[in-house]
Length: 162
Image 1: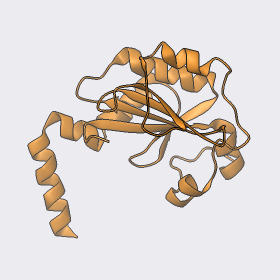
Image 2: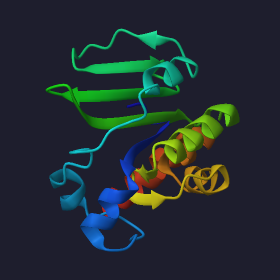
Image 3: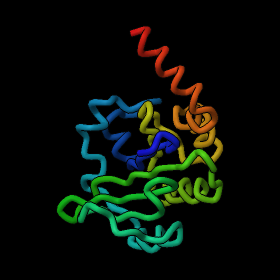
Image 4: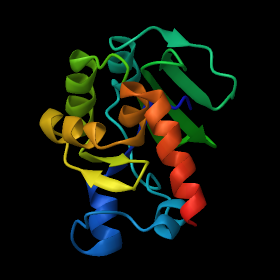
C-alpha cells in the first residue's frame, strides 16, 4: 500500500447483520480479522467479466489472487482460499480521484449486496459515491496527498505525544 492510497474491503451485508444484529458504524478490529466474511457467500457469476471492464487484469504475485488496475494506483483484488472467495480488496489513488471508478465500486458493492469497509477505521460505508468521497476526504491518504510535509509533521507530533 502506498500512503496515497485509500483502502477498502467489500463484505456481505448479510454477514454484518448476522454478526451484529444491526449495522454498526465500525467493525471491531478483532471481529474483522476473526470473522470469515465471505464464508458461504458468493458473487454474481459475471463478477470477473465485470471487473475486466474496470481495468486490465494483471498477473498477481499470489496464485490465489486476481487483480485489476495498477498496484500503485487504483486497484482491485479478489482472493480465493481453496477456490472459495475470501476477500475483495480495493485501493483508491487519492492523488487523482477517478469518479468513474468510485461509481463502479459503489455499483459493484450494491450488485453484490455488500458494504464498503474503510480499512483505516473499519468504518462501514453504505455504497454511495457521496458517502465514499466524504470518508476519503477525512482519510490519512488524502491528508498525505494534499500536503506530504504537513502529513509527516503531524505524524511526528503525534508520536512525541505518546
